[in-house]
Length: 301
Length: 192
Image 1 (cartoon, rainbow over the protein chains, first blue to last red):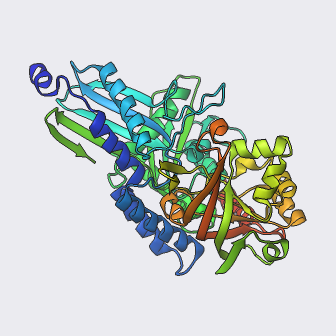
Image 2 (image 1 turned 90 degrees about the vertical axis):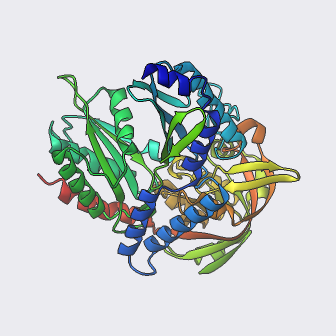
Image 3 (image 1 turned 45 degrees about the vertical axis):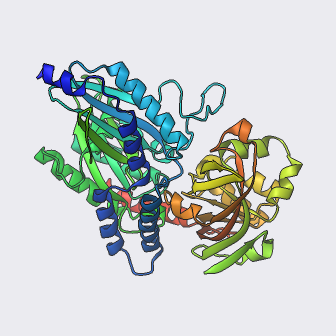
């Protein structure tokens, strides 16, 4: 396989296909999300404020896709998960993705969204140390797969991490404890993360890997149920409880406060038990791109 | 649906109530984190003229440089609570009659709206393309070099810009109400 991979992918430049990946993420609402927004709209009272919010969201999706305009002016921080076969240069892919970000910024698919934390200066081209965020994995397939998430600042601000046990929440080191943390985080977020949110949860891990895995859990199609029956049941319970809070779209009150919850688990240290809650806005801007050969055939999903 | 033309006055905004739908016409200024800190730390007389009777919009737009100026591509609201330390004083000092954002603001701002006579309005977060379509012209931009695109003051001429009054000048806040109601539900859900 190795020889074939090198023959078909050697010398690949993923810059231009990645610009398209960024455009999709910023400008085109995913179908699985749109479906859930339409469902949520149907549950609200005719003529209510919350129904109007859903109407605006759907109208915005239409305008943004037609004209390739960013759905939201906060085009977020870019997070890439890259899977590549053996023999493909990681540093090559990294520099091409950085180039794609700059190109997409020039084309106004992205807002210049990086600020030097010390000087306070915005370089204007989305460059900066530690951005975009990269996760590289070598895999045993003959394709390159790039997942991208554009994570907005408002929803990042309301994301939260807990350590169990949490005394004020009476949350112990079990699923019930995790449930308490998630409900607390969503309650505290109110409408600030642009509800209805899509919520990724990771139980366990270290502080850094926990947040990362909570975001990565959101790369799965919302319509595909969790393969672990216990977690699937738990996710359904969380959706029900979160929606009972009545925070509604944009925090105006309503029946839908989340359109999906994904839970994952990492092994933990005996002394630690983190619950990481990654809140994303209703748009959940993420797409994936699969490249089979340098001659073309890029699949976006 | 109430039409608001900017600049407006205290009497007009005092007539607005929590839950009212409005359409905004005229000139407003964007301002977010750096802008509010800038207006708060020192009095900037040139901004009184630019803001008096107008609304300030918590927004950092996506813009494109075109031949004779700027085109706005996406311009929805950003989270407002970050301006909670500044808003009431800034509204008062610069004669601002309305704040547009998302997520609502806290008790200090609510008190300020009551004392000074102003409203807080919510736009739909994430709906940047639809909001941009209501911006007919970029009249000016201030502090662009210093603050960068998202944080600069953008002076927009808007037409039919939709928003909902979610905090009024009579002490009513939809955000406060929803928080209180959802807290009751949370307590039920967390009962052992």
